[in-house]
Image (cartoon, helix red, strand yellow):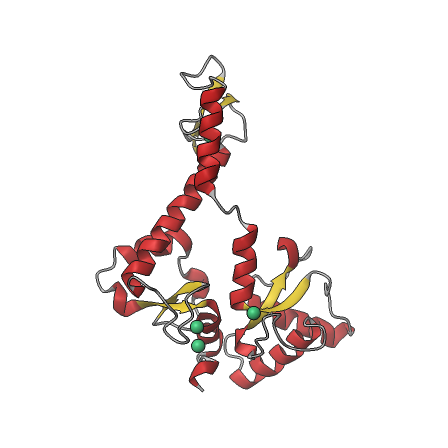
Length: 250
Ligand SMILES: [Zn+2]
Ligand SMILES: [Zn+2]
Ligand SMILES: [Zn+2]
Ligand SMILES: [Zn+2]
């Protein structure tokens, strides 16, 4: 798929984005550059049959299905949108304030007198003092060794909130390192919906790349990080990744 020519990629993109954009290949924000567009999955919907994982290959799959059967699948679940707006939707849908969430649960634990050592047959969360039945599958498992389960010290909601906080902390550090006090897209200057951009290896090998916390930790411990990574908004970053060139540079 990656050796499909740029022209052919753009031709297929235009057809698919028009089909899922209500007759026009554009985002609700008004953006029309094909290199910036993607398919938004409404409400985190996932296809019920085996389809390619990568966004680009999924689009080609939809295109070929239409060629063969004459129908565009899942038009009620898919919507043409630019990468920046699509990322925004995801971020807005995610739990927005894990810190307040944690504090509220800890305060409730104190009010209800749930702090203290666990009673027999129960497990206590170190963050919120919540008591859980021992071996409750909802309590996060650290590892399983020789058939025995070893649990983490936090209940699932606290564990998840901590993970989100840790990821945000690392991302803020990465942005400071690569983009200074006021990080902005290196290409278009946009200051929101920022992604981290890999300067080398722009196409191929995306699947093997680290992302999220693993990528941020790698960046923070790489001495010449500033020459290897940069800050770009999702639109410019994805255009460069998928087409080797951003429309802003034309
Ligand atoms: Zn948009
Ligand atoms: Zn907890
Ligand atoms: Zn940009
Ligand atoms: Zn750009």
